[in-house]
Length: 390
Image (cartoon, rainbow, N blue to C red; front, top):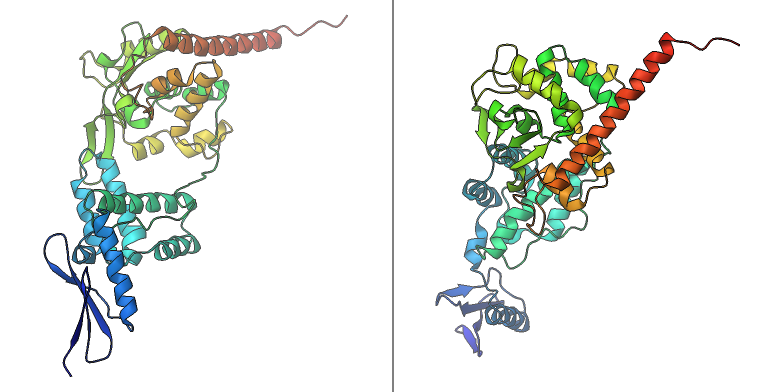
């Protein structure tokens, strides 16, 4: 008996010699497509074609052959083609792919990725000892890659990354220094030229790359403000790369509390070269600071233990300064401008931080410093002049 073909309004179904049914259809591009599997019943083949017809009518059809590309190939191209990524971000994405995504999912075709498979992949990461924070970073990267496959390349009709809570890190609460601890840490720097790095980072809420990229031309002669316009990024194989801050809102001018301005001016006079491009903070030989070298240089781990803040990271200075600024009663909008955060509504991108609102923040911080210093002076006076017994 010859093959029998069933005629439908959309697509064709034919019975194979094996007794199973094969479904095919003409795609929107005019090319005939055959289902990747055969069906035990004609009714199942009809259901398949009805679903394909619905996706075409709704404009959601994608070429099944394109979904055969492996995740590893698509993800690597995705990273290469993302315009505007910072070098450090590219490095992080490639590390996450190589370490946590590709070993398990890299060989899977895009069209074969399912929510169940993604859920199992994440569960396996956590069982293997990967932290929830790192698993969340890997999940968000995978979701972003597959979002492009859905929304831009139209390879997939739906993103399989639909695991509730998988994108949440829930990191441990970071330590916050008191005002006396910040000055104690600054005074504990083995090299005096690095003392103001601690103070400026905390009071101006700077990121490491922003603070280490500051130049003489970025600071007001009277120490009243500093301007963040570039940042240092350390890239494997390239060393320190000078580029834009982490976000567009990161380009900003920050008012410095009055109480610490004289010390900043003294730092400029004593430790910074005369040229406009002279770096504010350098290593012993005058070169740009690198994170690992700095930690070794100042014996960071031992130093933070001595001030009662074991486990403190340099970035916690920025976190500390952000909380101090919030305590002055500033609005969320003004705080985001000072911190260099992008507002979701893109309202704060290049707001000038020399505004009266930002000066109020700086004045509030200056008041905290004055209160601290008056308290230290009173304590010293009490030690020199103990009360006389009556």
